Amino acid sequence: MTKFEALGLQKSLLDAITDMGFETPSEVQEKAIPILLETETDLVALAQTGTGKTAAFGFPLIQKIDSNSRTTQGLILSPTRELCLQITKEIQAYSKYEKNINTVAIYGGASITDQSRQIKRGAQIIVATPGRMKDMISRRLVDISKIDYCILDEADEMLNMGFFEDIKDILSNTPDEKSTWLFSATMPKEVSIIAKKFMHSPQEITVGTKNAGTSTVQHEYYVVGGRDRYPALKRLADTNPDIFSVIFCRTKRDTQKVAEKLIEDGYNAGALHGDLSQNQRDLVMNSFRKKQIQMLVATDVAARGIDVDDITHVINYQLPDEIETYTHRSGRTGRAGKSGISMVIVTRSELRKIKSIERKIQQDFISKKIPTGMEICEIQLYHLANKIKDTKINEDVETYLPAINDVLQGIDREELIKKIVSVEFTRFFNYYNKSKDLNTTDSRDRGGDRDYSNRGDAPSSGSVRYFINVGEKDGYDWMSLKDFIRDTVGLGQDDLFKVDVKDSFSFFNTDATATDKILATFNDFKVDGRFVNVEVSKNPGGGGGRRDRKRSGGAGSGRDRNRSGKDKGRRGDRSFAKSENSGKRRSNRRKSDFF
Picture 1 (cartoon, one colour):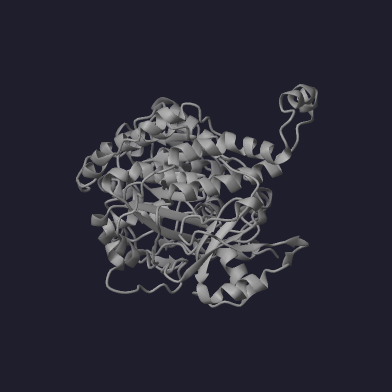
Picture 2: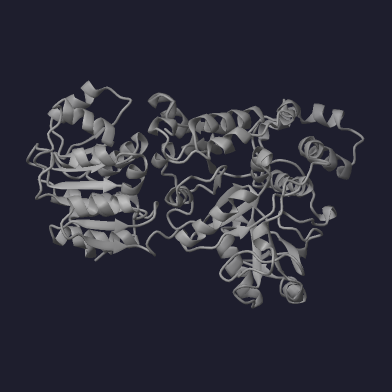
């Protein structure tokens, strides 16, 4: 018996699960599915995004639906168009072996006539955004008076977006005897009000700690001046050549500005916000899923539909007004058991918000420095060297080699390598050479040391920075690499910090007292027949560190982006101080300002 079969799921669903490659149920699925299958009950489930909540309510819903009846029996409410479509696709995939079960998506930005026509043909399950659903009810285009199940997915986000009254109106059109299943990442007071008003003695399950962040995400903050947010953002991107990230801004206006500036400066970026048409949003999301866009700049509302498992970084260009919103932002990375990093760019005046978030998510933030220009150049140097090494030779180049050899005649090997890597490296060096330090003093660190237990960071005084020649390509992330080094050397839980994993190499720090032990351990050390080398970096700082260049053999940028016009873009580094000021207006803005 499989683990999914043990939950009580029928064969048609198990066959669909097999087709999708699911092997082990997530914690929220393991807790919710048996309850929902065995009893007719209301349920409140608290779990982070990326934990498999759609399957947790989708499988029981499909199994309980009467496929012989064309009546609408299940209603799923979700906050955004993207998430509505995402849930619809997943429900359709789960029910692929169920005969006659029809799932229809209802959302704004598409023809209400076409959606009404689909419902009239028979839709046992409707997935809808609150605004469009309320509109269709008022026009009598949909009947939910006989539904058996109502699911509120991402309930906290729907209420945070101002849909409280809409949800109340929609639920008032449903029968009292239905079962209501509420799924949420956090439990703010508005969600509690909905639960008390429209649910009857609900059972409650919690995955992890209530309102806490996921343990697979490392939280970092960088303190800069208000005018340096955008230059800091570019440095964080340049320090992570293979970044695949979502960048959060507070408003549509800021989102569009930052995205346009990144594109102007040669980055593979795109914007996602409510001023885009549905077709434009679909194009942006398709490009992001295909990784044609590496940096997706989004508003909080628009990002609710993003369900991509391998996002490496979430960057908070501006902190949100509500702490619960930060939980949703950071939940975009570290999904499906993978690790991720949530970065926050803050000014000194915003540091108190970091403390508030720490208390809410019950995790500590790591204070980090914006990398210096030379640290970025060094990281790009290693990245290009490894990219050249790993590039598969295109045999069609043979035709052109005689002419190329004539052009390069007289240049020895060492000089040729320098010239090749300098083509890209010089672009970064010319821009970052003599660039200023963007970091400002972190007032939180004044007056004594902070508690660094269970964190990836520690005070840099007396610490040593190391280079190690393994990275993401070798299957490591910041968690697994930290465990590997610590267990191999025999270090304590808190002896290893500032672990920065790149594509094919990494950096880490320890206290100076551990240096001899680390170097001795990794002397002629092999893993699966391959030498794993550790060297002391010349730069003990947090960003990248210096390694002996005679052994590096390469330089420059590995990001496949057009750097022509770079100088023009670099000269245009304008700050977005107005964005910061606009962020001071609290959540009494109209909903249309945000999505």
